Structure formats: structure tokens, C-alpha cells
Image 1 (cartoon, each protein chain N blue to C red):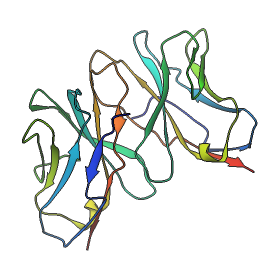
Image 2 (image 1 turned 180 degrees about the vertical axis):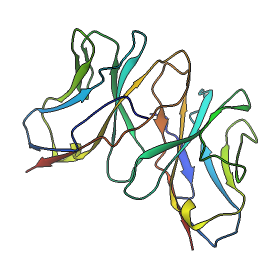
Image 3 (image 1 turned 90 degrees about the horizontal axis):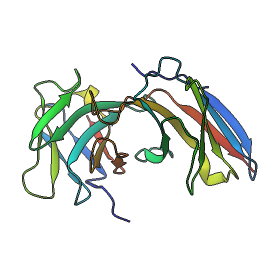
Image 4 (image 1 turned 135 degrees about the horizontal axis):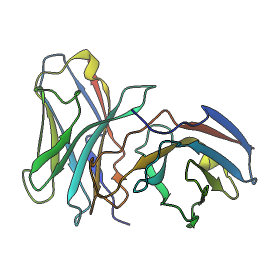
Length: 113
Length: 112
């Protein structure tokens, strides 16, 4: 069964550094999402992306965050200048249409020191 | 904010049915009920969804009350691998927001 794959599985970075989290959604999917989960807390929506533009974003997704689909297969989340509070699991998800269930990757654990 | 209310935690004996309730009293006519689960820190996994009829798939059954204000996810023969956090989410699949809003879910522990 096709999967959403995320790399790396764990990323450690220093405060103030830029990070790029990578995702390969399922190949025929058209809608893409990033969620995050701080340890012990809820899964929180960050952003949705369709037709090469952001369709929705949360208040967490401020100017430090950006998303891109640089080619036909990758979907990336960039954090420009990381803060300690950005430490979390980041999940990518995709779906073929909004009415269909989301398929999630297994996440990237980001640790900011 | 999440539109659903779920118990914080439940235990279930291995091999028995696990019945996980969800209250969604403010659900509107076009909103579906979706169930996902999260095993340890893995990505959420889709289980099942429905509008008003009961649904069954290879993983679970979904029973939705006639007034649609609540539903129950049934795992018919729970195994230790079903230990997870289970999320009930209400969403209109084709209008308005694309996002799913996760609540705190029910932490199900299946006991040997």
C-alpha cells in the first residue's frame, strides 16, 4: 500500500538555524498538509496546500514557516529561524480529495537546542 | 476547537470488544464523523468514517445514533496492538475548511 514518507526521522538543530523537513506524499494525491505535535500535547494543524498554494493556515504558521512543492513529488516545510518551542513531531499528510481520509507519514522529530 | 467530547482513557481486555464513545452534539447535517488512531508517536492512522448509516470495514465498526449527536467506534476483538489514542473528528468533507481538528482523544489500553 502506498505511504507518505518523511525524512529525516529525527533532526537536531541549534536555535536560530534554518531547517527543512521533507515529505513525499502519495503519488496521485493533490492535497497536502503539515501538522505538528509537541510532546504530550494534541496534534495541531499547521497548513494545507493545494494547486501550488496555501489553502489554509493556522496562527502557529507565522512568517518563520513556509511550504513548497519544489517538484512533482516532494513537499517541504521550512522553518527559517528555529526556536526552542519549535521542538515537536512534525507530520505530513496527503489526500486525493478533501472528502477522502488523510494519510499521514510517521513524522520527523525536530529537537531545537 | 474540536467539536467532539471523548473519555480521556479506557481499558479493554484482550479479545473483548472495545467500545469507544464520542459526543458530537453540535454536528451539522453535512458533517461526517471520522475516526483516527495514533499508536505511540507514529502518525495518525485513518480507521473509518460515516455520515448517518452504520459503517463497517476490516478494522472497526462505526455506530452513529439516529440524531447523530453521538457515535461509538467498535473494535470487535481488541488486541494488544490496538493500544493507542483514538480520535473522533467531525468535519464537512467538501465545504469550508480542509483541515481536521484533533481533540485530546481517548487513550485505549488493551490488557493481556
